[in-house]
Image (cartoon, rainbow, N blue to C red; front, side, top):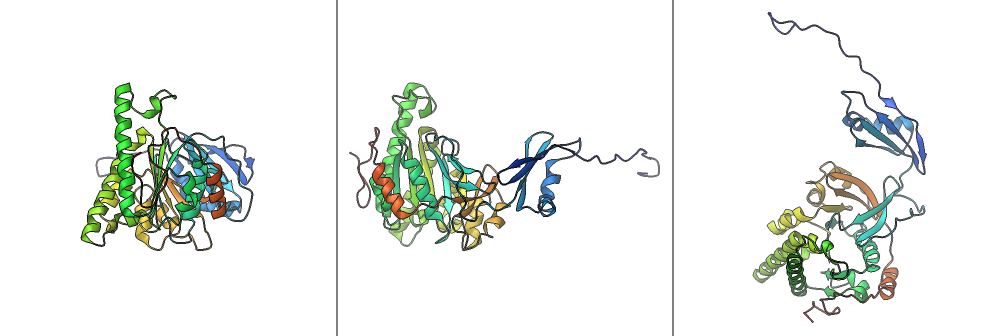
Length: 366
């Protein structure tokens, strides 16, 4: 009875168990497809995923919904991010695609810069951030890609790959020169696309299409840090250049990979604006909550707590987020000597090298 004048009668709908398919074995567990009845949602399965893991005695259970009315439960028997097991076979390479490691469901971790053009990578010292950059460099270095490095650690990290870089800046003044040169290239490509009547460089004929440009910045916080009045001017200029490249570069084959030990709003409004353009995020072990929040909080808030559980013993383990989806990953270990040797082997001639060979403090036009 709802009130004195109205009464509703009827029968309570009996809950129906979902229709469970036949479990299918995988290399690291099994998966099963479940068909839902009206009124049932994937959220109900997500809420009890931990209970499934305990009941089935597995490491974890991932819940996905490939289409309406269907849920897939994937049981993972052990943590694939630990131990020294063989790496999964990577898929066939595609331009700007890099296989960086493995995911927590024992699949290959592949990043395609044509799908997600800009990335922010954070992590404390000895967290595995440099290992990820090394893996990324070796993957892209084997492709016809113009690699531009900005290493605010004096070139100690990216200098190992110097022979393959088209430009390397090791201080903020040099970074401004490099970024200004790249932005000029962006504007030239924009004019070429407008003349050809296309909306991106990927619509240009392959013979006239310029090579992609990938800018790797190690310790982007040093670019944005303000320590003096002159430093404020340089930091503002760097932030403006990075923001313009991020906003304009994706359709023109220019991409950013920004790495930092710490990344927070205290670096200024430029940091927040730049972060908004970074569609891909990777967070390793960090020393402060704000860095985890700035890296993952706006894309996948529930991933922030997961990132903060990464321990010092889990080097290379990180949480990555793209378009609201997150997962744990681990980058492939690449030694400094392997990185240096790879640079020597892949010192490719670039057909659109608008930057001069690497030199101290930055680059200038040819």
